[in-house]
Image 1 (cartoon, rainbow, N blue to C red):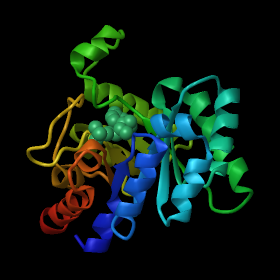
Image 2 (image 1 turned 180 degrees about the horizontal axis):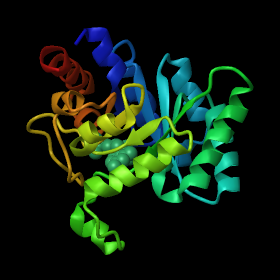
Image 3 (image 1 turned 180 degrees about the vertical axis):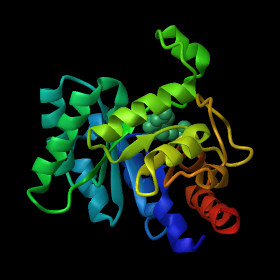
Image 4 (image 1 turned 135 degrees about the horizontal axis):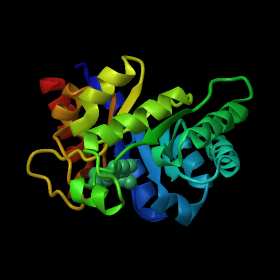
Length: 239
Ligand code: 3DU
């Protein structure tokens, strides 16, 4: 893989407060192209944080995992991408009408221009079969991910968030153009933390991920830039 391609495919999740987030952004500037603003940062700092990251030259994945009635999600999706976000998440578990409403929301925000992409979260990478069972889902993780991915694409959604373990199946199911975004990525030797269904960066890409999301292995590293560059190097060499 080309170096430039690799940088387009690694999304750095910055789950912290404003000062640390801006410090990380400044350090990663000129290296990383994508940052993920999740609930921790967004709820603390509000929509302006997205513009601040955009002004620093980053593409922003706004990971709010919307999940509510269709009317509310339509409005939330529209407002969320008006911040300038390039990519937004909703929960697949919100069902078809909610997903279609999210698509309407991002189209409204685009006002005829290029719209942000919306992807649906399938099964969280922190969840194993026992966790799924505890919420009443007895089917295997892979089947549940398939079901939610099918529902998402039938309702105008651009792709999915899944673990690297489901990435190849998602790619097969959704086709070449779909976004398959995988968190649960751990470079060799990195702490698992609360993640359960994981793979290395190169494995995730080889299995069909269009993008990988990496948070703490970069943001908690002594040298976040070196940690980021090691992932890019792994992709360039192996993927
Ligand atoms: O475990 P890390 O620190 O690399 O962070 C993973 C990120 O990915 C984190 O921001 C979390 O919100 C996100 N994530 C998902 O979106 C969906 C998952 O199934 C698992 C993690």
